[in-house]
Length: 181
Image 1: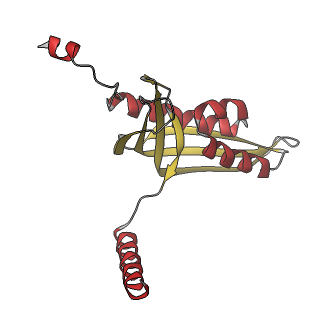
Image 2: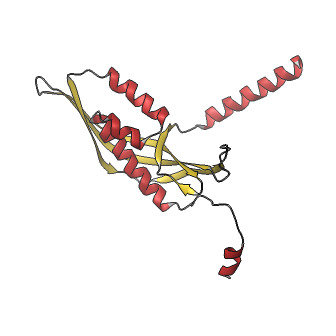
Image 3: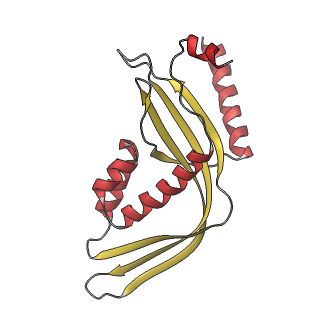
């Protein structure tokens, strides 16, 4: 039975295993917020894509220099869940084996953010809260080799009302195009 796969020459495909993705999402989620609170730009660059890195850099630049912060993941309140798992070929010139995979993982966690002033060493603020986040991970495959997962960004949950409003906008645009050709 195995000879069949050995004889057929197929393009490399991304491995679609789910368990390692959830593990990577948990690790990357904790790492990016820990490094953000440490203001470690260099490590953030290795953990997330350029778009999210730009957002983090802007946020870091807007933080007061005399204020430090600490972020901790206290616990997961429910099991992480994959809500979307997509793979598509990438049209890269000279690389017919390129592909992109994006996975959205829902994380329900309890987090603690503490802020304090460096001069006075006095705590300014401490907030513990339960958070539901949709972490978007991305992995690129080039020439049949998969790169490491990176955090692409965060997504918001779409409500039924938002879907209805979007459908209404699409219908209105179709009607307008039909009238104005």
